[in-house]
Structures are given as structure tokens and as C-alpha cells.
Image 1 (cartoon, one colour):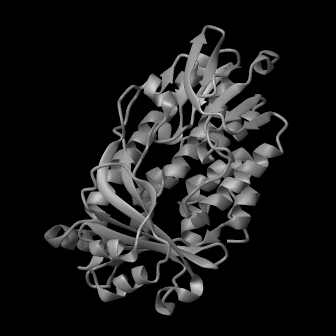
Image 2 (cartoon, rainbow, N blue to C red):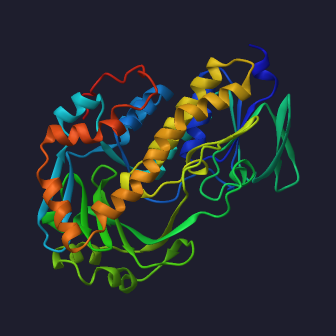
Image 3 (spheres, rainbow, N blue to C red):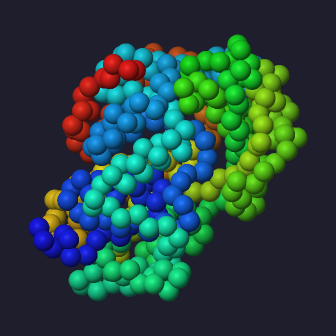
Length: 408
């Protein structure tokens, strides 16, 4: 319809969620302008985990083949006891898992994944990418919305999507719930060349070492050239910090009580940087007229279900579906998007907190109960447990979602 082309849909934020939304909307026939605050488009951080629901989103967005080509496919989710170095539980991710959920489980470098989205957006004639454009506020009326930039420029559009992350300026207007909740959990990130990873720990697995108030996660990346290493401990950090370089001594302070084998992994890390983790309580208020939030701007979540990027991509798919289903009625489309997404993302937010408390960080009898429950589950019981997350996205069948690719 010609009304789609009169004003573009504006997206504040050019991260994975923003670009996923842009790509989905462009494929649905909408013109899109992405307004990114940074001077260049890119992603910080290292590895992220991709469940089968991520691959379903890739297929909806037309980048399934490109995403599959750069991923590392792990065979297991492996849970270790950080105090004893004993196995607690393993979820097999090979053929039975892929048949059950229609897609694999993989790990990728965040920058590599962002690059897949960026190249697809650059190739689309319907997407305009602008950098150095910090959206500070907006105005709207019955016919459109105007993004107000820090530079003073006013950018007109038909709809504005806030995909501007944890500290979203769009959320400030739409929700108005103040700053994020500081959890007191501090995460330290490093990347280890594979040859420096202890040889007996070079598992083709996303591995979690769970200990009292602390955990260690590692898995291979970038064609097995490196291992991603993320360690977290609950140190009651009082305020947000992001990407601050730190020395190994500070990292090790949270792991003096764990098994030497677990400590040895940390000692191989280099160039550590820290993040103090934050999230927010779920909210039902995602929409203000022609403005809506998406991804971390809507539902920032802790890392304990490894679903932050996956939820943002699902949001982008759902938004595009609803905009296409409600031609000429942007407000109805945004409300339909909100209704479809709010309960699923709220469940991810709340269960991520619970997983951190009851699986990643318990001590004493609490940890012993965890070990007993988790070690007793069969593979089929595990698949039943995680079906709500990986097998019931609510997005409908993707064009190639039923295939289990040969390369995995």
C-alpha cells in the first residue's frame, strides 16, 4: 500500500534487536530508517548462545543460511559442580534434540552475528542506516511520530521503535519506571585462544560450573579458534559498570573457594573486562500510541537462560508480522505485537532470575538439592522441561524451520 511508503518506520538502535526488526519490516514491504547513537554500527562483547528459537527467527528474517554458516554447533549443555569438579547433568544437543525442536543449538561471536544482520540490512533497498543519531525524545500525533535527536534534528516517521537497550530513552517516555535494577552480580569476560585452554577441558559444549554465589561458563567460538570465558560472582556491586578493564586478581577473588580445576580455567583468561548486571521487572506497558519498545528496552533480562538476543530477534519477527497484518493501523499493530510478546518475555525475565538463584549460585543443602533433581532427569524429561522456551515461540512456522541442516 502506498501509505507504507509516505513515512518510514523509525528504529532507535542498531544492535541485534534493532536490525532484526528493520530486516523483518523491510521484508514485509516497509521502508525503515535505523537511527544508531554510535558513530559506527557494531557490537561489543564476545560470545552468545543461540537456542533453536534463534534459528527459527533467522529463517523468518531470511538470514538462516548465513547465520548457520558462521555458528559453532555444540553437542551438549554441561553442568558441573564448581566445588567438586563433578558432573551434575548434561543435556544432549545432537540429533534427538534437533528433531524435537526443529533446529540446533549453537554459539557465535556477537560481532559475527551482528555482521550477518548488518550485511543483510545494507543489501536491502528499503533500509536506511544512520549513525551518530542519538534519539533523545519523540513527539507524535495521529498521522505520525517525530524522533528528536541530540543534534537537534527532527526525523519524521510513521512509527518509532525503541530498540535502544537497557538505558533506553524511548522507554523513559513509554514506561517511565526509572533506572534499571542493579543485581549485585558482576560478570567478567575474556576470550582464550584454544591452544591456551586446558586440553582436558576443550569440550564441544556450553559448560557451566555452578558454585556458591559464583559460576563459570565457557564454550568454543569462531571455528574453534578461541574459547569464550564468562565468570560471574555475587559481590553486591552497588552501581552499574560496563566494559571496565580489570586485573586477574580481582576476578579470582570471587573464586577462591572453588575447585582448583575450575580456578585453572580462570587463570588462562586475559584482558578481563567487567560488567555489573542489571535488569528490570516485567511491565505490560510497551506502547505509547505510535511508539513501542523492543528487546532490552522492553524486557532486559539476566543472562541465566542465554535468551537476551534471542528474545530481541523474536520481537523483531513478531513486530513485522503484526505491522503486515494491520495495514494502515499502526497503533493496532503495535498493540497486537505487545499482546503476543509480553507474557513470553516476562516469563524469560523472571525465570532467568530464578535460574540464577537455584541453579547457578546456590550453596549447601540448596546446591545438594539442585544436584539431586538435575542429575535424575532423563534426556526426554529435559526436553520437556525446556519445550516452552525452544519449541513454543508463538511465531509460526518459518520458511525453513522444519529442516535440520546438514552442516550441523
